[in-house]
Image 1 (spheres, helix red, strand yellow):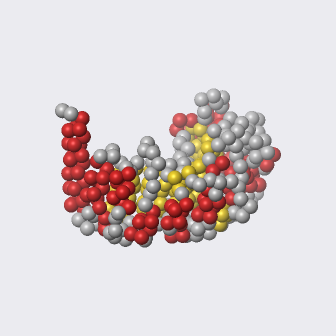
Image 2: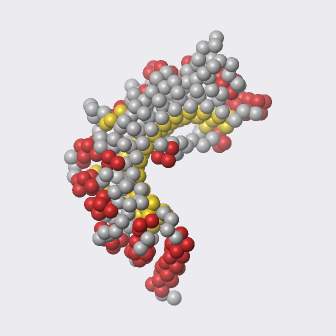
Image 3: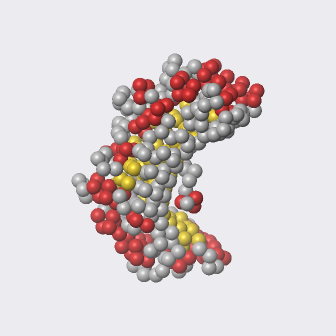
Length: 390
């Protein structure tokens, strides 16, 4: 059997499956993710277009030019469409028909762009002000050198945004003297991959922020940096904080990260995998003394790595005392009981005494203490909060 014949049978089978599903769905709104070769895509999309009035979520992965051409000529009704994702993995540059989508899908609130080029015309037609969730991964903002300013001006229009996810190079986003104000953002995840850390987090003003995740890949660390450079600006309502840095070089321990954490009294989760940021002082301040509230009194989840502890800056006894104090039912009002403690280790770790001690505490008290391979640091964009929560 010829390759073309096999491909034809596969397309027919896919068409039958899609048609059957759509017929069974009746008049209920549905979501779809279309990722096919350039021959099957337009054919399958033509079938889906017949039911476009019921689209709720649409994700197009590596759409062909023919498929996008069909979409650009569409003049129907996409009133129910709330979520759109355009993803480019293997195919070359393509233009998204934003002018058409802006007209036929007036209720769009959730937009995901992966490796898509965002040009001047695209920026003009994307409904930034009505988005409640925006995810941008490895996208390029064309027409440099104004691309940077175009990015900033577009971000400033995200006045109703609740969830923000960005993955980009530091060089793609320069620091600004005037922070980008995002007054309604409740959850934000930032991932940067570049050679050095900058104060990009200080370029966003998110006063309502409750969850923040930040990750850096492939970086070297300036000795003048401290944990504060990873923290969000003016976010007193913060409840969940995660920071991960893929580097073996230490942060500067002189920045007193415990003072930084004092700014966030409502924290429920701290997940830190950043070299040499946790000291004996921080751990001891998590212990309540003399009926006084400790640092971060509402903590329920603590995730740390062996790399997070600076050499000789944290004693096992201090860590054990903290766990025993926070896992037990608190006697002081305003302190939450710790639910989970994770201590991850890397392949070159020499923390046998610590891991053995943690396992002994778990066995003796039946506490949720996880060690080594039992731990799982959440992905950078794995957020508790989502637009459905607002």
